[in-house]
Length: 482
Image (cartoon, rainbow, N blue to C red):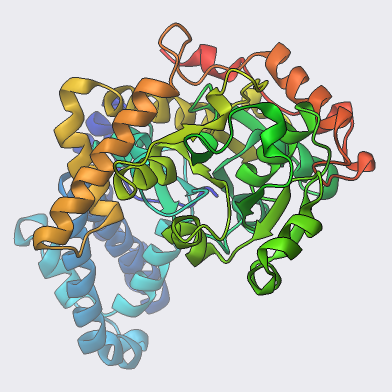
């Protein structure tokens, strides 16, 4: 969404030279017109005075705006006050012959004060300022929708925002918090203008098959997905021990749920049997075993229950799912000294990781999209700083401004520690140093698509939603970043 935004921070040097020479040239024009008889008629005189006031107002607004948007706001407030006082005078006296305006030495404010055509001047200047032109710099307004609530998982975006990296690329970025009820793809689809999001590769492929709007991945934050599923140590010692077990899921269609379904299918367990947590908790242990049979049962829990891991602690489910940087770490801290096993790392089970958080945009061909390029480059700069160990303390402070701005005392200290540990896990486990940050490979996208196609029944995807055109990514956009 390109909106006019008066800012001369990126104006070329010749414009400032023109700005300095402009008043002298206009004053010479004023003197010539005033000495002629052209303005003897009251209507011509009024139009001429309106033009003079408009030009002087526009110049002063531009000059003030070079220094500060705050000064501009105060200036507009003063204009509004003057308008309120002299609007009536302007209307009443518009048909009368007016006296000459004072010379340039009396200053611009004196001209406004004595002008009898202030009302049409204000209208005229307002129209000029609302129309974007080649000289006035324009910001590009961008929205970024996260896949989950504010936390260290999105640290690079916060850093890019706080450090002015987006602003340096002439972007004004609004970061929209995600959550259990917020699908980033749906939000980006309905958003106007330049809309970006953070989502999952499998969901991107599915959405491209289902929705009219198309999405294109432009970069990857994590080369390996942080999604995990874990159980108590000793309860699952071999592959067949998974049969008949229950595992916590949410709706069955989140990125963790879909990855889990794909993982189970590739390990030969077929599709999960889904049951609501309310129905599952009513069953006796014998009924649960009969319900599960040789399959894995996906117990659909409310999001609040998934966040708390209480059902796992109470042994209502055998396996918990979530992110290694969040749920797994929290479970290990809570269940000490009980050990947990990350089933994705178990030697007796197959696991081929997919991409983690994917930065995507609405549209099919972003290669020539200047906004997308600037946004991606600034984002990569932000993540580069966020993942630098030497900047860790500063980065966590920035994260806390978004994740927990109101917490104080002990609660803030604990949240600060949690966000720090999350960032460390993500940095050490899921960002591959040997691969350029943000980069994507066609082979890996093709592999994800083939695996989804092969097991579309188990992961609950209509085959008609999967075709080669649903895999949309642009790996070349990254190469344009310095």
